[in-house]
Image (cartoon, rainbow, N blue to C red; front, top):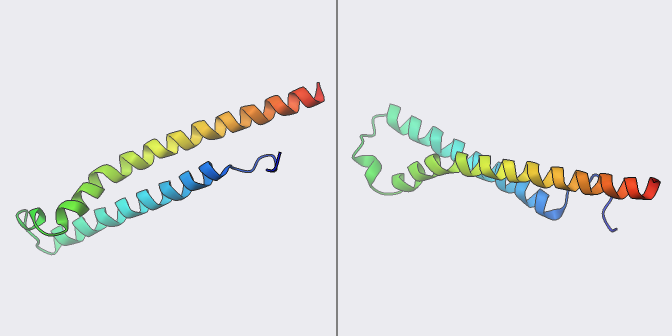
Length: 92
């Protein structure tokens, strides 16, 4: 076994960075839409340029981040069970 017990795998670390990045970008795009709305950008302006992409990120980012958090929790539970089974078989 090359990894220490209790350390997350490479997949888990990648998922953590993905969650942080997706949720961070989603929150930034949400703030951008709020600032633009309060500064007087009309609804028709949100249909042109980069605004449709920014609005789509706002709608999609947080649910995707939530799904990735659930996947990360499941992977952590599986890893802990596997470690517990290995420790139980060694001690018993």
